[in-house]
Structure formats: C-alpha cells, structure tokens
Image (cartoon, rainbow, N blue to C red; front, side, top):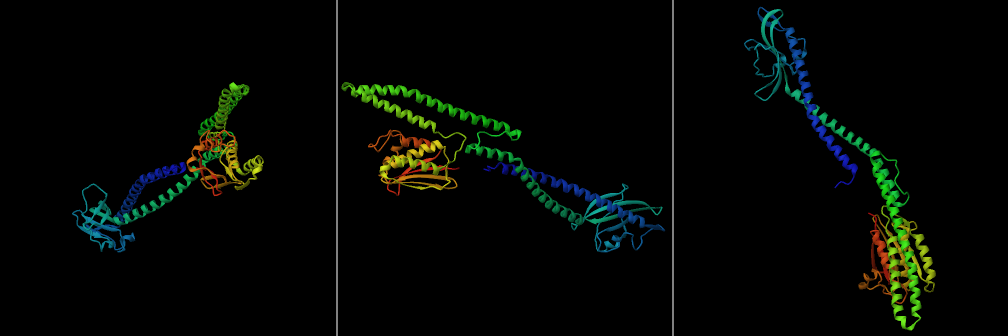
Length: 448
C-alpha cells in the first residue's frame, strides 16, 4: 500500500496523462493522415494540370513533348507516374518514370469527372491515383483519361516517421508534465508540511496550538485540533485538581482516625482493635497515594515530550547518595550528554526515583545507569550488584503491594507505579540479571 499522498497523486496524474495521450495519439495520426492524403491529392491534381497543359491534338492524334515542364515526369528514377488513356482504355502515353513499372491500371471513363482513390496491384503494391477525364485539349474535342500515380509506401514512410516523432514528443512531454506536476504538488502540499511541523512542535511542547496561517481547506482541521488540545489540557487539569481535592479531603478524616487508633492503642483491652484500625488506615493511605501517582503521571494525549536525561539522573543520584551515605554507593552513569527520553518530566522523575531508590536500597555498593539509543528504540537500564530477583518472583514484584524485602519500610507500590507509567507511554519493562550480580530493570521505548 502506497502511504505517500504525493506519490498517490503523482501516480493518478501520470495515469490520467498517459490515458489522455494514448487517446490523443490515434486522433492526431488520423488527422495527419487525412491532411497528408489531401496534400497528395492536390499535388497529383497539379501534376495532372501539367500534363493537360502540355498535351496537344494534331490531326486527331495526341501529341506530348519529349520533355515535360515538370522534371519529375522526365526522370526515370522519380516516383511520379503519368499515364494517358483514350476513351476505350488504351494506353496512348506514359512518362519516362513509368518505364520500369508494370502498372495494370484500367482507367475509369464514366463521365463523372475527376477521382482520387487508392489502387492495389496484384503484387501487393499500392498507389494513390488521380484520374481526370478530359474532353477538350488545345481547344479541340477530345476524350482522354489522364492519370497520375504515386506509390503508397512513400506516404506510409512519412506516416511512420510522424508516428515515431509523436511517440518521442509525447514521451518527452509526459516527462516534462510529470516534472511540473511534481513541482506543483510539492508547492501545493507545502501547507501540509507546515501543519506537520507545527504538530511536531505541539508534541514536543514548543507550542500550545496550531496557527491559523493555513489554506482555507485546512482551517477546519486545525480548528478542530486546537479545540481537542485545549479540551485535553483542561480535562487533564480538572482531573488533577479533582484528585488533589479528593486527597486533601481524605487526609483530615484519616488523621482523625489515626489519632483515635493511637488513643485506643494506649488501652490494653483495645490494642487489637487499634492494630486492625491502623492497618486499614495504612492500607487506605497506600491506595490513595497509588491512585494519585498513577492518574497524575499518565502520558499527555497529543503532546510528545523529550527530556534530557543526564541532569535528572545527577540530581536524583545526589539526593539518594545523601540518604544512603552509610553505604558509600558507587554510581556509574553511561548516558550521552544530550540524550533524551520520550517522557514527561514529572513521569520520568517518578519512574527514575522509584527505580534508583530500589537499586540504592538493595545494592551492596554499586549502581549503574545506562542509555542506548537507536533509530527506532531507546533503552534505559538501571542495574545494581545486590541479591537480584529470582526468575519465578520477577512478575510478582511488579504487582501492586508485593515486596520481597520485608526488612525495610515501604508500601510495595513503587514498582507497580513504574510499570503503570511505562505502559502508559507504550514502553516495555523487563527484569533481568545484571552483569554486576544483581537485578537489571530495562525500559524500552519505541520511536516508531
């Protein structure tokens, strides 16, 4: 399937132009053939006039000069053939050019005047024939049929030469037309290229909407896209505001419940109920945090973000190194200086924060972050030299609330949030063994 609009239009235009030329060629050939036959008829009529003007009647006999005014009749190698027949069809005179020709032509003397026709010999040779009936010669009564012939092959050669020139001319015209069409389509589709450029800027966050400097045919499309962009931004903001309001409204009741549970815990008989209550409060807090992070870090509709990775990594690693200063973690960043990741900055911070915090917490002394970029793929890898994750447990730890490390505090939602963020960007998260000895979290983004 041809996906280029320009190529489709070019193929359609080329096909139409080719069909038009193929239909026009026979018409042109027919017109030229008729014009050529008309010219031959006029020429033969003029030659007949030459013969008539040279003919004389003496004592009832036809007399023709040895040399005619038209040299074509006098030269044996010329192809203009002249004959004169009497009323009974007997040949009474022939031009010198006919000496080597065996023409079996029977004149038509039927009182209908002049006639232009084609004559076919038994050997397959064809001729144009102009047959003129003459009743007066030199002022005297006479009855002759004066005939001029010209071989058809000369006409055919001329027609074939014209056909070849037409084919060459039409081929050159078709190529020139295709070149002009290509240029015209390039100019005509320039507005679509401008629209694509503006959409790229919208995706990259360089502009908030499309301009109105487009042809009238595209203004309705650009207007619809701008309304969609505004609606998407407003809906996303309303969603975030609603989630913030919900979280704020739930914090106070949860704080009250937490206070009540602490008061209950001070009474020995209520400690079991307080423990259950605190467990449920913690679970509710966990659910609220998880849903807030999951909803607020979704991919933004039509906007395609590109964030430079290295400054974010340096900032996060600096913070985590202070948190885990006792470990003296060695961090290796194998990231090109201006390399980017196709994510929103907030989502990238949340994802990297969870992955790096997990690596710092579980490593022995070393963490490595690398980025590999290709024409259609970006792969981000976070590795550590910790105990790693058993293959049969790798799928489970990516689920919400699941943790292998029970010694350190946590709610078990970090990797689940990471997985949700990655999936919202149509990326892929895999968990492998690292050459450092621990786990390797690989995030692959497709750029297609």
